[in-house]
Image (cartoon, rainbow, N blue to C red; front, side):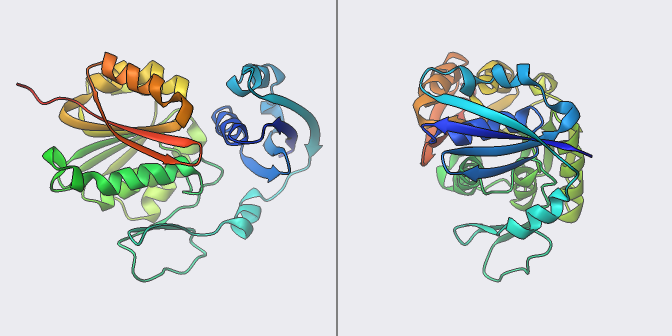
Length: 289
């Protein structure tokens, strides 16, 4: 299948290059290469949409200037290209995220095997690592999570490759529901769930409103700022008393917006993690009096 390559020049490159990458991923772009001062992104030819590009937040923000050029590519073996460049990701000595063609390494509590097939969530992005760090730190926060995720119900909203859902099951969650709006991500997540031998995790195509009528002990949402803000009320309603909500996919400068929205919906901000320009916010739902 032919692909379209869009070459972007971004000024200033950081943090806007990574924000642009995350936004492009949301509208169907499947491969990315960082360049000096910009980014090259790839999308199936029939999905290329100039109007969709022009409506991205990065294109309209006055603090960044973005220009682009377009070229057509013939079919390429994207998975082979990815395999050549992918390297295992390690979060401390607790989590190692690798591909099938990498050998397992001793000394890690959780060895996760992920083949992204262009879905977001290999662990290479700072926001994925922030979510992993927050999940690993839960037992130290005490309260409902003093015993970790053992017996807990988890929802991974915007699951991508399902790497966080897989980790949640490995950490002992009794049930994990992984949801993504993109069908390709759903197919990929199902493959990764099977590859990692997960038996308590389900994957489905859906969106935040599909949380209505359900409740969870932990909700993971690594998406992007505007979607998180729109979904805050639904996520808060789906949290059991004492439940945790981990939010990422936004930059440090926008964290105050997420905090204000969370408090507006009765949640208590707790964790605040950062890596470079990227941020995570952890919240709790107060227990019943």
